[in-house]
Image (cartoon, rainbow, N blue to C red):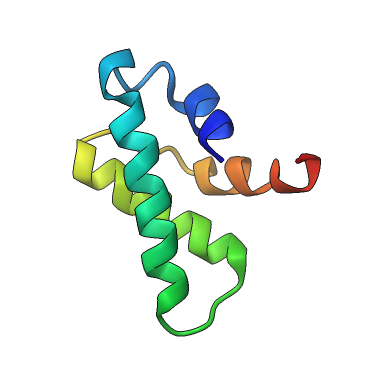
Length: 74
């Protein structure tokens, strides 16, 4: 998911922060799956929203879906 995240957020996250941003997104995904079961689309949505909030990065409606939609292409 790091590649999809980098592509989507390259205009909103500084290059020197991108690794920390994608690492936080991965950690939040893990945190989301350790809770009550939810569809993976919701896991991605909540994790990217939390990541954006942590970094003060604008979340645009549909960002979570844009990342999730790339999963079948991997």
